Length: 428
Image 1 (tube, one colour):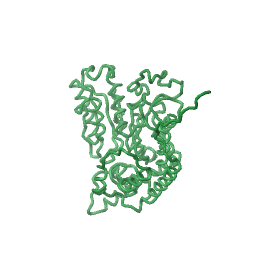
Image 2 (cartoon, rainbow, N blue to C red):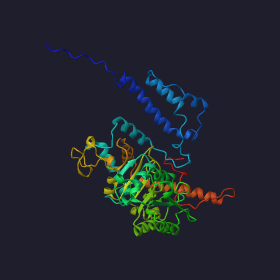
Image 3 (cartoon, rainbow, N blue to C red):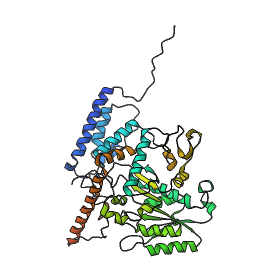
Image 4 (cartoon, rainbow, N blue to C red):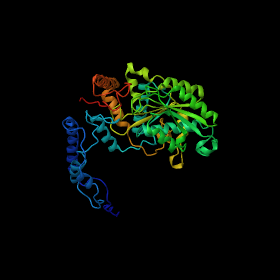
């Protein structure tokens, strides 16, 4: 007679009591909804007191606590002290505010716990590819371009500049390294460009001195003539210019570089044009503002955030690259345990590329779901109206400042008075 299998005593991380956790989960969901709905009744921000800071110096937990106790601790020490950016009167820095439905999407993405780095025939990769295709259509970027969702524009800029460096090096930089070229590779951006560009240049081993920060004109845009002079001077000194970085909405003033002029220079000089469109690129959704971004569609790579002017919860950015081949060649690596077919297609013959072939991450979360669900919830036309509304709010504030005897408008209005003035999808 066959022996009965023994009951396993192995531990798991499953709930000990599914039903009590269900009750707690419903309470947490209700609390989250109430927290969002009543946000206008609280101050935009409050400083965490010393007792809160002291609480987070407690010892490492070795023994378990009940989920209910852990949640009560969260309610007391965490929830009351956010940055404040979900509040409609939070006007600091360049923070988006997120939405309720997108927060639900984050919960469902976490429940699925998909790795979007590789494999095929699973839904997360199809969702991400559709979001990327939708963004290309929204911004009138070439539909044949490749793309990848990232943690934000810092990662997107790093990826875009990696592709630029490798494509313009003139040798196999992945195999031979920077020194094989024999010349310093030079990049150019305005003195107002975001600090993530300088970080990317340093991380790429180019050295901070390879980034020429060109002075700006009276409108805080890169000075085109000084840019041309810098390129000519570096060529004369034996350096290798390879990339110009344009800003579509700078952090300090919201300035948009003359992207058409930059595209013309890059075409003439055989340089890569990378555009940092972190927040300002989305103004292209407003027909009367699109002309300010003319030339952006000619960029070889375009970095942008969706957790800013697309109002999504942190974190989600995007990199688009005109040449899919250059993009893939910069990152694709397929050891035996990641073997897949031609052109990045999966080992099971799927119709989507492995997304890990387009960035430095192999393990990637399902960040596309909140974008996909939000775009369906609201529709692109509503996003266009919200962005127009934000611009009108900034212009109204600018008019009030100009009419005031006690205030001074420090910079001309581009899209926003400052990118941080009214970046909210909520009613005030």
